[in-house]
Amino acid sequence: MPDASFLSQKGSKAAQNPIRVDLKIYSEAMENLYHPQTNPSGTLPMNIAENQLCWEILRERIQKVTREKDIPDWVANYTDSNGAPSFRKATAGFLSKFLFHCPVDPDSLALSVGATSVIEMTSFLLANPGDTAVIPAPSYPVYTGDIGNLPGVLRYDLQLPGEFNESEYDFEISLLDQAKTEIEDKGSRFRMLILTSPDNPTGKIYREDHLRKIASWCIYHQIHLVVNEIYGLSQIDITHPDLQADYPNPTPFVSFGKLMQEFQSPFLHFWYSFSKDFGISGFRIGLLHSHNTALIQGYQNAGAGHSISNYTQWVMQEVLDDHTFLASYFKKFQKLLTHSYITFTQGLKSLAIPFNPSRGSLFVWLDLSEFLDEKSESGEEILWLDIYKKTSVLLTPSKGFGHQQRGWFRAVITSISPSEMEVALKRLETFVEKRRKVKI
Image 1 (tube, rainbow, N blue to C red):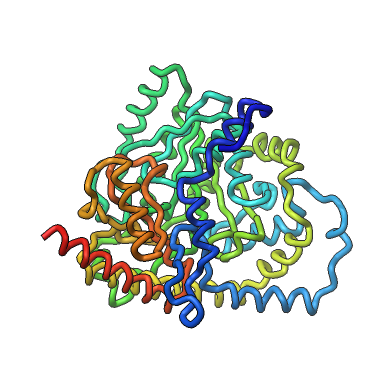
Image 2 (image 1 turned 60 degrees about the vertical axis):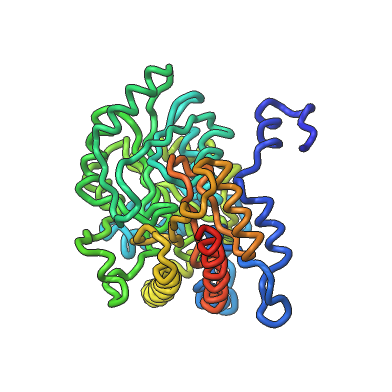
């Protein structure tokens, strides 16, 4: 335990609370990675949401930019803290063409260093310390720190009814009324509602008609609705012959950005990051889109310390302006993503392990509750560590996701190669068979 006695209260809390429960083990796993020849018994981390499927394709395009283009003078100077005008224009063009399918004003964008920065800045600007953000569970564990560490916003995990066997959320507006009453009874204010679509960890999406109802409710109650589409282009091809049976009555994915264009409300906002769809988490590019001009102005005035490197902006500006390349890139990425999803889920089906059918994201949300000795958080942690010890496959337990069901785990299907996926599935098969024999 680090000595935090000379820190502020927030500093002391930060020193004693890791970002996520699996971080230490992940660091250990990264020191012993699997290699078919040199380390065949090594680890296979499937817990960090990184997309490693298409880096070679994107790297080639980036190298072409840096070889053939002269670096413009503005790269060496200060620029708009919300993003260089030319970069915001290129980003607006990308969003309009590939995600929103409607016009996007570059002045409605504020860009900063990664999704964490965007979440933190938006929460700081929209909510006061002690206000509450409602987040349907299960959801991204690190939201807690992103909205809480500096902005001081509280997290309320909204428990949605139903089992994990659908690819789309059923959302009852009455749940928001109940949450609002409960939050206010505790002396707080329901200030933000945060949705992720496609979701982390389930891969579910929110239907367009539900998004409209949710947006109308939030506008009426003057509650800020933020939809995070960080996996907006990480979509599974549900028309694939191997998948169609899992999606009997699908509705199309519709970006919240399109709905925002219609509503033109100061209470509706959109988050995105290049980390997942582009597989460049190390580039640190996140964005806020909003028609709330005061929010965008506040972001600009308060966000200088969150500015993205101008060199990074320039490189990605060149990539984003090439729509022919982007169309080809996303076609290849979604094909590879679908292949990884099919490979992993077919492996789970052969082992009779339940999972939630995903519409998108980098994840599969799987049910290993049959192997719990105790249906509790501690029982889940014991199982999680046992899986890692016996298989060297590192999953993410549901601790921190905010959901009350125990025994569900998240697997990142884009963090390892297809050949490594086969190894991981074989190891999980051995684990499952041994545990089932013990139970007999």
